[in-house]
Length: 144
Image (tube, rainbow, N blue to C red; front, side, top):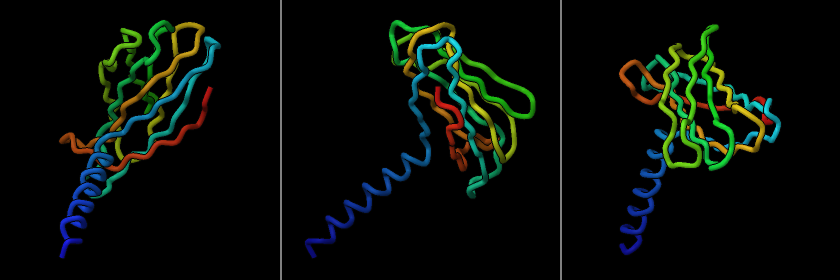
């Protein structure tokens, strides 16, 4: 009988951790010193039972205090949406952007304004029309 409270506590913590993972998508990366360095990602959005994808949301944060500005672009169906982190090294992300599109693949690029190593974080979420988080996978295609 003493194992039951421990088992319930472990199950509760596991459930909380899984729920947290299901709603937060973050990646960290870095761009090399060349001013032409670009990281390139493919994001797969899909209906995981929550509903069909309506858009991909993303925002970026420059974790380096004294480096060039960092930006991201979301590309889908020959259109792109851009956002730039205006203040390097602070705790805030850039304004979030939404790129419309249905279930399928979106492309996300990260670049910078000048030479210098940049460490960054990106938040990204595939969402339904009513802002419900749905299936989201990411694959890095280029790491510069």
